[in-house]
Image (cartoon, rainbow, N blue to C red; front, side, top):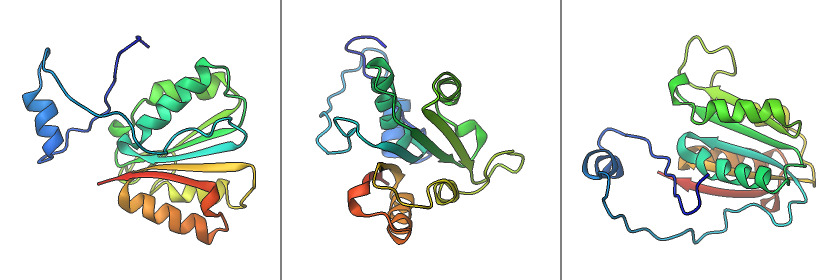
Length: 176
């Protein structure tokens, strides 16, 4: 990590307005204006709960930043389960980084669900099957953060509420 460096996690989507801008128009030296975060999609402070982080695609980016913060400040002392979903194996973002963290920190667990990869040895389908299996019983000491495509987020919130989680357990950020 470099002080003052901002790293963007952008998918090059055919026909996407941001994709065209970032992948065709921006070049080294281009000035880019942006506004900082204005929402409440942040780590609980202090971290007094276990975390389940559910994401698809570039929705993993805020979780990566949160995990970097927890590691850098020696706060990765609660259970954190990152559940990442995408279509194809080539779309697994930051895979080596998260696999390494899962091997070096007993508090961190990492699962991947691929919806279209026929030879994938792990969970096939969507992220929902993983949290429904592993977090079926709501606990007061867990918080669930969800980030990704709006359809996945909406579906996850609906499923988690039906499972018995409350709005107090959930925080989410959606796009698309």
